[in-house]
Structures are given as C-alpha cells and as structure tokens.
Image (spheres, rainbow, N blue to C red):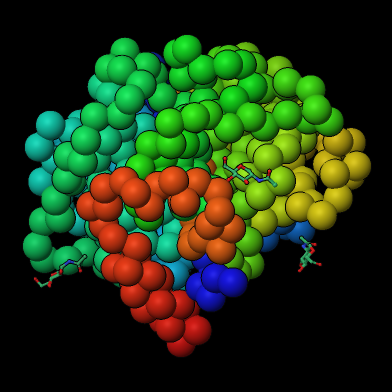
Length: 386
Ligand SMILES: *[C@@H]1O[C@H](CO)[C@@H](O)[C@H](O)[C@H]1NC(C)=O
Ligand SMILES: *[C@@H]1O[C@H](CO)[C@@H](O)[C@H](O)[C@H]1NC(C)=O
Ligand SMILES: *[C@@H]1O[C@H](CO)[C@@H](O)[C@H](O)[C@H]1NC(C)=O
C-alpha cells in the first residue's frame, strides 16, 4: 500500500581514531563506489564484478578530500545521489554531493548550530530524504529536498528534541520502515530495540523484541548498522554488527524477527557498512573491503553465506597502502583509510502503519504525515520520471 518507491541507505558512524577515512556506497544500479580509498575514488561495478577484475578510477574535481575522521556516505535513491558527511576535516558541516548519474561533485553548506556532524550518528530517511542525527542525546534533522547538486542556500540542521535515552547513550541507530531503531539502550531488555517513528516524530514508549525462532539473540552491545534496500519500496530489514563482530544480525521489522548470519572476517568496531539489495559491504580501518551475499527471500542461503574480499578494489587500492594513510596521497588528495560507521536504511510510508504509528498519532507531529506523504508522492513521481 505504499505507493512510493523507496530505498536508501545510509550509514553512520562512530567516533574513531583520528585518521583519514574512506567510504563506500552504491548508486541506484547497485554499482559499488569506494571514495577516498588510497586517495582516489573507484567504481567497482555490480556484485558480479567484485570477485575479480579491477575497479575503474572515477576521481573527479570538486570531491571532498576524504580526510575526515568519521566520514559517512548515504544513497539518496530518488535522486541517485550519494551524500558524504565529514568528507572534509576543515569543513565538517559541509555535505558533499556526488551525482552518480553525472559523476560530478558539489558542496552543500549547512548551518549546524550545536550539531557537530563529524561526531554524530546519522541516518538518511528514504522517503522524506531528511537526515536524522543524534549527538549527546539530542535529535536533529535536515531536509535535503531532492538535491543531487548543492543548493546555493545553506541548509539548516534543526534541533528537534532530546531523545529519551540520555546524553551518555552512545547510539547504535538503524532505519527501516520510517522507524529509527535504537539498540543497546540503557535499561531496555536485551534483544529489544527502542523506536522513533519518523512520520509522527514520536518516540515509542515501549521497546520491540526481535527474536530468532523465539530466542533472544541480539546482544546488548554497541555496533554498526546498515539497511538493505529494495528495488522499490521502503526498507524492511536492517543489519546490526556488534562491535565484537561476532555475528551479523538481520532484523526484519515487518515480521519482528532476526536472522543470525556470519560475522565479518575483519572484526573491526570502526568498520563502515553499506547494504544494497543483495549484499552487505564492509570497509574496515585498513581500507580492506569485503562483502556478504544476501537474499531477502532465502534465509537458509543467508545462514550459509560467507564473507569474501572485493578483489576488484584490493587490486587497485591494496589495504596496506590505504592503511598507510596519506602517505601515498595522490593528487587529489587525501588518504584513505579506515572508516567506521554504519548505516541503515530508510523508510517509507507506512503501510504497516499499524506498527507504531497508531500510538504515535497522538503525539506531536512536527512534520505532519500529510507533508510527508506529499513529499513522498513528489518523490515517487520523480522516481517514475527517472
Ligand atoms: C534551495 O534553494 C531554494 C531557493 O533559495 C529554496 O527555495 C529551497 O527550499 C532550497 N532547499 C532545497 C532543499 O532545495
Ligand atoms: C523476493 O520475493 C518477492 C516476492 O516474490 C519478489 O518480488 C522479490 O523480487 C524477491 N527478491 C529477491 C531478491 O529475490
Ligand atoms: C512488529 O513490531 C511493530 C512495532 O512494535 C508492531 O507494531 C507490529 O505489530 C509487529 N508485527 C508483528 C507481525 O508482530
């Protein structure tokens, strides 16, 4: 029942060592990009091309230096643009926009107020194309409109309200179905997530359990996230990799169940994750990129899936040289290295509305659902036009 296309992505991150960071993301055709890897930008093509061959260099003018300390990349599915947060250490509130159709860059200025985007956890909501950020217990948003190149006006980060989780909670945030999920929240039962309903700007009072075959499997641990996209429609599943890398959990917010899959080979709490439709990609702190194949319709295949290196990137930007930081710094700029963060998805309307929305309706609605729907329809129209 949602009529909008959807998708999205995102990622966030976590504070990490102060080193230059690379970033990975996909475009709407699921080509994998690695930015700032060994100082350059790369297109590794689609999943069938990752195991062999070589990525194509796409380093272009106008790119950020990729010298931030917590760089995060997000796919705006409606615009086929990739938004980069903290890609420029000297200007942490800038958002760099990569138009994946035109292979061109532009720089969006923002007014960030009390928000330091390089320290915040951030997701990009699929249907509204709004960023949501949490820093020191405060929730912020920023409307990206339908931008695939920068607006001449600065865009404001708005301080919405305090989260109920306290200022010392270090967020593990993930997006699916217009709901931001918060894991590892203090005083929440293990295996359950707290939820913020975007369309109602409402923090659900009660957490939701996500068991596996009736058993509690999600640990109470900080971690990284990413949201699987759909070809069309809202994201329904997000990935959670706890910092110890012990397992990869896939949480389905329609069925409220969890799959327990292989943990990444590289157990790196500072790794960055991006999920497409059929794969989860990890970029670790040494610049090593690997992936796990995924099929949203085949849990038994997922349970057997193993992580594999993305040779197409390793062959052109070997992890060791990436890790050695800027040393190799090629022309444009910047080194690459690690990164961290995670991401997660997006959302869309609510057909399933039942979920939390019902209760949410009573709550405040800074951004009313009507405007959200209107926006989504506009987005849908544009998506169709594309
Ligand atoms: C961009 O700039 C125009 C003109 O100043 C403004 O109307 C619009 O709301 C801005 N923001 C976005 C996200 O397009
Ligand atoms: C999963 O199943 C649905 C419904 O049959 C189908 O539309 C979708 O394309 C399938 N997805 C994959 C990745 O096979
Ligand atoms: C899943 O959880 C949501 C959010 O708490 C709830 O509204 C929904 O009814 C649940 N769905 C199922 C199938 O249990």
